[in-house]
Image (cartoon, rainbow, N blue to C red; front, side, top):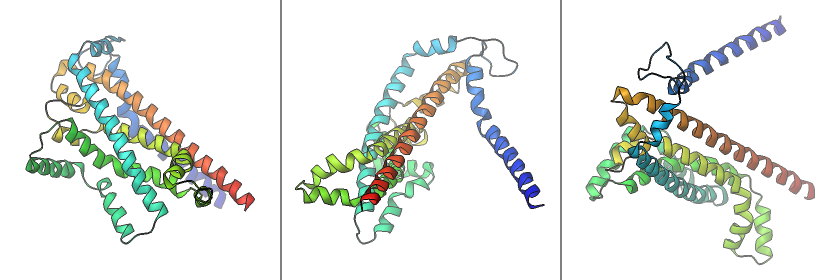
Length: 277
């Protein structure tokens, strides 16, 4: 009786998982379908197969500028948020100081705050400071949003480090900076790469912060939103969305691969250290 109930529960769990995945990703499948559809109207039935909408993307100068701006913002945000995340994760994993948990919780607060609230607050603050809206303000906003993600990724990397390796480096006469550069950084490098990839993906796809803080130089999500008002532009937007979807999935796969590689590497080193202890 118990085994029959377990089998029945497993089957329903599988059905639920499949239904959930279909509900979650069915809208995403529509992107490539309409991107290759030979019609300006986004509706069924499909008219035919074509790749001309991808060719339209290469002829749109405004799109090229938006892509360039998004790459600048994404790379800058990824580097800055990863550097700040590494400092915070290193401090949280290595040192003890007053109000440590409260400070880390405060830093992670943007993860749970609605982005619309964060965007409006940043806009009011920048206007009060008299700072003009530009790509710099977008980078600042994206760093605020991406840094908690970087901390969450790098915290596990720094937590898994063997402190005896650093102590051995100090005993051999190496400085703190030399120990970090030659011992710590290579060990956490997979986590750093994973953080760079994920924060870049988040910054590239982020719309609300960019919409409020951008000036005359729009980013790619803001450009896509502006094109949605014109029905004839929708097929090219679908083509652009297909490209972004493929790039986002690729970056996330690479980030997950580096994260698992870091976990395996630290597990092997921990086993080796335990064996010699």
